[in-house]
Length: 116
Image (cartoon, rainbow, N blue to C red):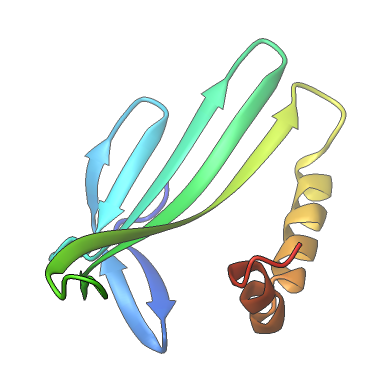
């Protein structure tokens, strides 16, 4: 089990998220105000295991048409979809680290701008 609390830094501000839910294959962490949540989960089938780390941010934003303030949620997550054999934890980490490196600010901006 991961340590409690978990912490991420968003725009140079640390967000401490104590554990708020424990399941048999997942845990959820959240800031006190619920602005940030993190879920870590695992789903196993006979031939594969899907491991997910997801961070959500919720905020109030003005609708550009009506100017009404509404709650909006952004989700960012990484899924490791691994077969039941054939890849070591080290090999999985190599691919995760490669993807993290590729996710530079420039490439994230391109993806957010709908480039493919």
